[in-house]
Image 1: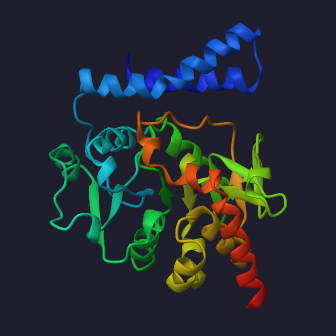
Image 2: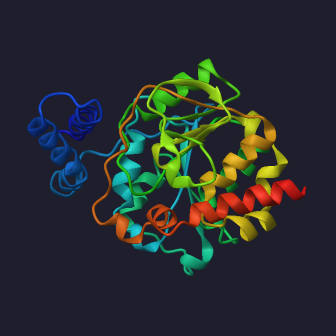
Length: 299
């Protein structure tokens, strides 16, 4: 089965469970099928490796930016491949890696074909952990073309309309942060914040969730407050979504979201080395958010 079809089925399954369509048995079946989508896509890539995608066009289109680390590098090519097949093509894909994780800068051979088709490696001397996802691409774009930057995770299979959704929102709200999946901020406890289930115009009380892919306009990443590395290291080195939310609030930048998009299927076993799950389960997001609010109240 083609990967694009699997992704459309995943979205349909998730809509069935979210909207409580059908009887309990059909909803349970849809939920189970959605859970296996990542494995099915993984096996499709392993067993029936598709022809390589066309080279990315360059130019003034959006830049996709991401980071990764050694435990996930073996299968990263699958995520990259699907990002290159987006119906709205990115101009390029920046993969930002920490030098200390790759002392000899040796990368898997599976990435080599994609380096000829629009994948770029940015080597970083600072170990900014998840902040590598955006930091160096923002700085590079701020001094160059100032293209929209879309951040993504390295362990998810994104639907091929992901960039289309974000660029449609960006056209409507050019100075807003545009996110496929958001939470509404309610009080100090992160786990109490609820997923926003409806399309919404720019709102400062929405948190853009990085795993759903987020578009940042140049009007936002020109803001100097984003690049305060001392504050990042002190307050929220492992909570990039919350740091960027803090910067959005400081700059008066709202977050817009569109129609429901399911959480993309996961690359199998990737959550064994997941930062986001430990942030939530161990309450680290609550600690980071409280630290950010105290920090800003002192300034």
